[in-house]
Every structure is written in C-alpha cells, then in structure tokens.
Image 1 (cartoon, rainbow, N blue to C red):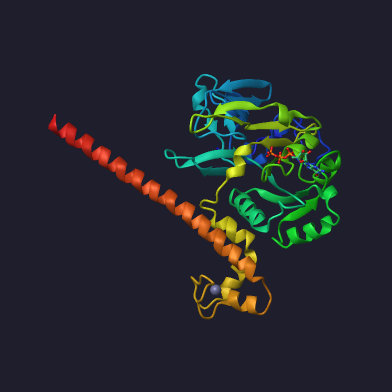
Image 2: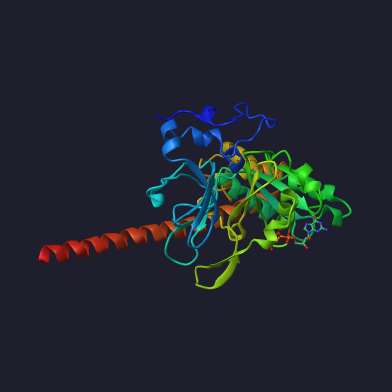
Length: 360
Ligand SMILES: Nc1nc2c(ncn2[C@@H]2O[C@H](COP(=O)(O)OP(=O)(O)OP(=O)(O)O)[C@@H](O)[C@H]2O)c(=O)[nH]1
Ligand SMILES: [Zn+2]
C-alpha cells in the first residue's frame, strides 16, 4: 500500500512552511514525493537514507541518526534516496527520483551514466562577460527541463561590468518560464538573492563552465570554503587520476547543495522534450505550419518562417533550435545504434550458447 506517511515523521512541518522546524530527514532533502512511495512498516524496517557522497569504492549515506557506507552500485548516484536494508545493504531499494541527470557514458560500455538525482533547482551559471553565451544557456536549460529540474539563470561577476542589466535583459529573452538574476558571487549577495530557491528540504545544483563562479557561489551559500577543500581523488574511465567531487553539502538552513563537476561535460541526449520546453515559442508556432512534421526549413506554409519574416521571432533563435535538435538527434541516434548493436550481440551470444548446449 502506498500512502503519505509524512505526518508520522518527527517534528513534521506538514504545511511546508519555512518557519517550522526541520526534521533530520528534511534537512537531507526528504519530501512528500518520497514518503508517498513507502509504507510505515518500510519506515521502521528499512529507514530512508540519502546518498551524500559517491566514492569509487563506497556510497556514503545519511539518514535520521544513520551515517554509514554501502557498496557502490551503477544504478545509484549522488542525491538518491534508498531504503536501507541493514542485512543486505546492496539490496537497498532505490526510491523513484523526482529528477535525474544522466549522460552518455564516456567510451564504450554502458550507455548511460547517472550523474545526480533528486535536484529541485539547477542554477545555470555564467559570468557577465565573455562567457555569456545564449546557445550555452539554452543547452543547459534544455538539460534541466529534460531532467525535470527547475532552471534559474545566475549571472555572476555583475560587479565587473558597467551595466549588468543588459546581460539580465538578454538572459530573460531565452524563456518566459526561466528566471534570471545577476550578482557578485563573493560575499553575502548569493544568500539573499538565491534564498527563494535555497529553502530547507530542497536540493540545488550549479551548472556552468569552468571559472564562472560555481564554487564561489556554493561557498557563499554554505558560509564556508568547503567546496575547494573537500576533493576526492578517483579514477576516470581511462584509468587516469582526476580530481572529482560528487557530493551533497548542507546549508545551515537545511538546504542541500550538490557539487559535481561531471555536469560540465553534459551532452544533450534524448532531450527532445527539454529542447521543446526551451523553445516553447517555436513549438507553439509550429502548430500553425501546413505540414505536421514541418522542419521549419524550406517547407511551404511554415508558420515559423512567416513569424521570422514578420519579425516576431529572431532567425538566429530558429538557427539555434535547429542546432540543438541536430545535436540531440546525433547523440540519441548513436546511443540507439549502440543499443541495437548490443541487442544483436546478446542474441548472437545466446544463439551460440544454445548451439553448444544442443551439441552436448
Ligand atoms: N569579481 C568577481 N569575481 C568572481 C565572482 N564569482 C567568481 N569570481 C572569481 O572567479 C574565479 C573563479 O571562480 P570559481 O568559483 O572557482 O569558478 P567555478 O565555476 O567554480 O570554476 P570550476 O571549479 O573550474 O568549475 C575565482 O577567482 C572567483 O573569486 C564575482 O561575482 N565577482
Ligand atoms: Zn514550419
């Protein structure tokens, strides 16, 4: 039976009000979405724990008065909630995720690599200078939408430009549904400007290129220098040593911050819906195209082309849409190809096994 047992949690703040005390589980990001998946009997027998660090040889998990490690699993990533099976820890059940960031595994082998789970808000970070790049924003926002995460544009180094408002205005044209803020990432500003998203029980993450201020922002929110100092050395896929961090940090108010540089190299894969969400204007216009499968290229009766002629949307925006769609199609197709190849290979192996058995 699946019911919401959140009311049985100690000190529960059922109204979700931020003034209520935060339970130990809520401070780890526990939400009704998760409690709805489990019965009260599960709660006692297999208490929920969250994966706060992923090491090569272990998963570090925390729960209500629980602080332990589990064997690593490919189907578990940082941010995941597990129902801890103390007798068979490796069999702990993974709760359904409210959001999931994944990417194509580097090299051959597994198709997908889980990057992070159960993030509420992704701050898409860029500085107010040469890093400011609309296509990059659109790509990250599509990724966030696809992963079911709320994107928020954060423009750093506002103190270094004469008119940050120009950058803000440009950022705000990207999507009607994505908010944008500009700030100096050093000092107290992040705490107040990002407060609306960094609430107790929430989990936030930073996406963006190197050097835009992600660590600076995280440290400002954590009120410490934690992020720069807690690095974990791990092997990457090629057996080289790289410095990676995949962990959740707690803000003093009970919000969690995910720190994982793996999100930098994210590619668009199977992100069709996410792209359509970013380009909702083109999506809407395409309903008026003569052909249902109009590519808004050279087709007659294209409502998008007409909107460009009339100056309602920018030709460059359509060009960027084409480019993202192409990137996504390319990445997704090669994944699909690999999948079917793996399937064919599996079939061949099974066939050979059968043949061998029949000859015995
Ligand atoms: N003036 C100013 N400097 C900033 C701001 N944000 C970041 N910086 C500086 O920019 C540099 C890079 O910032 P980081 O926080 O390390 O950037 P990052 O995005 O975490 O970079 P990676 O760890 O490589 O991904 C540091 O020297 C920061 O002090 C800002 O808003 N204003
Ligand atoms: Zn069209």
